[in-house]
Amino acid sequence: MAAAQKTPPEKKGWWNADNSSVGIAPKPEVEKRAIVQIYAARAYSWRGWFAVHPWIATKEANANNYTVYQVTGWRSTVVNIAPGVPDRRWYGEPPEMLFELRGDEAAKMIPHIQKAAKDYPYQNFYRLFPGPNSNTFIAYIIRHTPGITVEMPPHAIGKDWIDDGKFFARSETGTGYQFSAYGLLGLTIGLAEGLEVNLLGMTFGFDVMRPALKLPFIGRIGLKDRPLYGPKAVPEKEKSDDHKDPMVSPGAI
Image 1 (cartoon, rainbow, N blue to C red):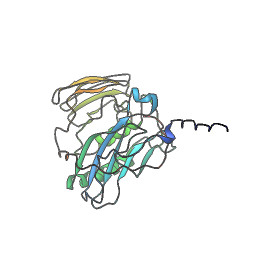
Image 2: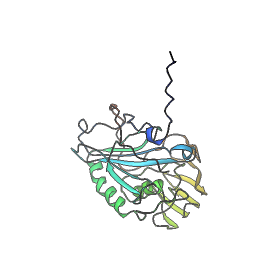
Image 3: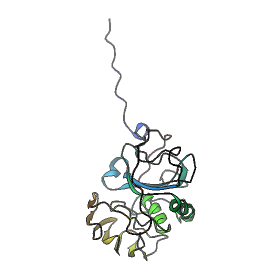
Image 4: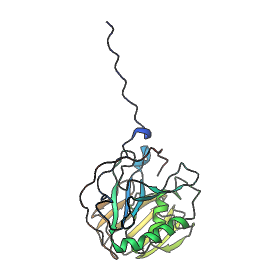
């Protein structure tokens, strides 16, 4: 009798990566209030050594689902706004929540997020380095949404591309000022940001108010970033069951 042949292990790739929930976001049937959340996870494949992929998730009051806002580089229209799992793993990488707000203040914030996503100047253009990319998009929304006074992680390459290629602007949190030459060379000074130097998309700096070093590839070493002003984030609540997103391919950061 011939020996049974072993089934070869399934090759791992973006098509079978884990995109399930990590259980941070509350279920819509449990939390009826409006919600705004910002997440970031290490980018897919080798890109994860250098950068993160971010997204914003919103839920209006009494809504049955979340809407996820992000930029993905494999579509002709790169801005992707669709119902989705807010706290999903990004192709196996667990997300970190950067910001959360619930209730009336979150409800007021959502129209600003919707408008900023619509007004984003690079609806059909994506460039991995130095931007505009997925980090540029979320940084743009933060800059144009009152009340989101949190900054993107230091290893969010592309975050320093200011709006439509401007050189000078208020800082991301609105608590200081920033110079940036297309995300390749820049300087940021702000009460929330501290001091940041941007060189070829890499951020070096330190945060004074929430003491931490800011380094490329690594992110923050020290206290976790928190908003200095505006609405305070609601503490994390009970974990939700895992659920899957439809299959999509991982473009880049």
